Picture 1 (cartoon, rainbow, N blue to C red):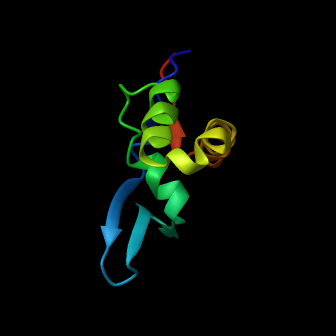
Picture 2 (tube, rainbow, N blue to C red):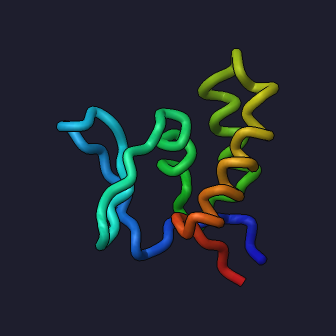
Length: 89
């Protein structure tokens, strides 16, 4: 399994001005994302590895660098279980 997640094609990530946040749009509705979920999902592009996502966020948020790796990994597992992301085999 590749360790570079990509957004499930059933979902579209976009910034919603009315909500003032990122959302995941899908045929049945919309998921309003937290700031931290948005930070991770904006880096999910199918070519950036899990590790590179962690590194990018550690650089962006150095005060929380110690917590980021576990949080990102936990979020990616959750997003995979919810079907928001997928990994190529």
